[in-house]
Length: 273
Image (tube, rainbow, N blue to C red; front, top):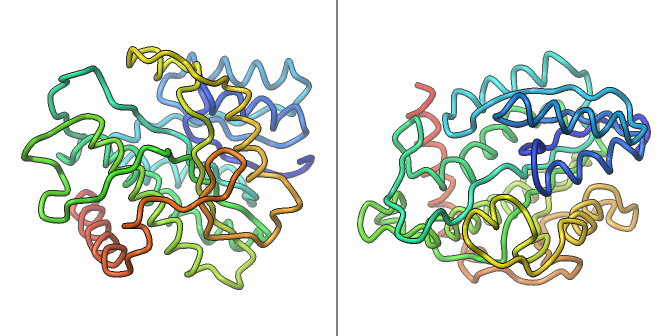
């Protein structure tokens, strides 16, 4: 990874911080992203302590799409190349019985943060990634997936936190497949993965879940998609840990993916004006 530039969103904590530190220790120039300045600075210090080059730190709250747009502007201003984009930032199920929350743009919060923000950020950074090819996009998704109800994508009726989370993660996988097809022949690959189940992260613990795997296990799976030479040119795949597998059947439905693209464009345009 020496000499390569990698942006890891949500790298101020948990899996993202673990991956960022390991990338830095391997010689990569890491762009650390987070909402909290102190925690993001903590990841940057860990990278330097691990022997990595001084990272960049960028702050943005992805609950507002204008912030994702500004984040892209800041990354483009700071670097002339981007070898890897890791879309890792996200929010989990929330507390049991938690009421429906909205993003700063008035969208269902989990759909906005877990799907719309990385979709916009990726779109904005595509020219830089393409110019830096061979390059990779890695979308950190989940084995927890649920079909999108296009009659009520913002879950205004019968809201449930796990359902909101699962449909946002399926949307991310569906977009992965579309983008991989769009970028065929450019040298930019796009893959998604479920890194590991209930890793011992702050998000998992805050949700009251018992950890079933380590952050290091999830880190191994994520780093494989980032850096393994055996995956050069491999694109449009979904992995459960280290194993390629099929996601929810809606991901293979071309009409559903078309409807998601149209919804995405409309929501982003509605937020950015």
